[in-house]
Structure formats: structure tokens, C-alpha cells
Length: 104
Image 1 (cartoon, rainbow, N blue to C red):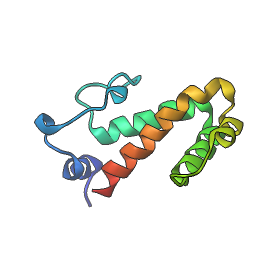
Image 2 (cartoon, rainbow, N blue to C red; image 1 turned 120 degrees about the vertical axis):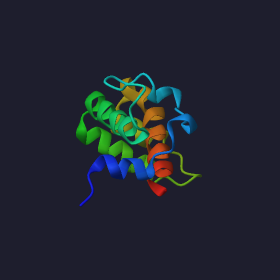
Image 3 (cartoon, rainbow, N blue to C red; image 1 turned 60 degrees about the vertical axis):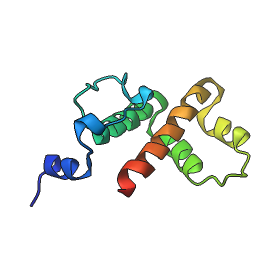
Image 4 (cartoon, one colour; image 1 turned 180 degrees about the vertical axis):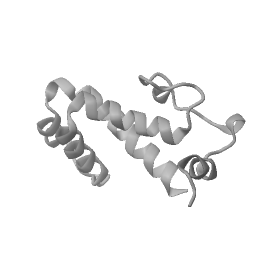
């Protein structure tokens, strides 16, 4: 049985090889020494807190299932609401980070 820190180390690049997207540096509760997996999870928690679980899940699923030629501006606005559209780029970042990090 392996603990989660051993598992994180298997999927984590050496500290001197890490590239940190700027938006993951200033998340509440995240420190420079935290793993990328932790930072990705912190972004998810931040978005869930800001949007609410149901809205976040709906927006995440919609954006994750989009095809390149889909026009989603009205759909995503109806899910999130016009005042919270500023979080859409962060949801996109989360999806890309998760795909990249967890595919390895």
C-alpha cells in the first residue's frame, strides 16, 4: 500500500524542472513548495467555492465536452450567469492542467 505522497512523487517532475502557470501561484492556501497536483486541486476548490458546486460542475462538464467548432457563449452564460463569466478562463485552465498532469 503506497501513501499519497509517494504517489505524488511518481508523477511529479523534479523541483528544478517545474514550470508553474502564473494563475496557480497566487491561489489561496497554496505555497511555492506545493506539488502541481495540489495546486490543481486548490484551483478546483477555489472555483467550487466561488461558483458553487452545481454551477461549477455544470460549467466544467460543458466546457470539457466542447468541440472546437461549438459556439458556447450563450450556453455557458446561462450556466454560470453573466456576473461570473470571469471564471470561465480559469475553468478552461483547470481542464487543460488536469488533462496534462493526469495523462502522465
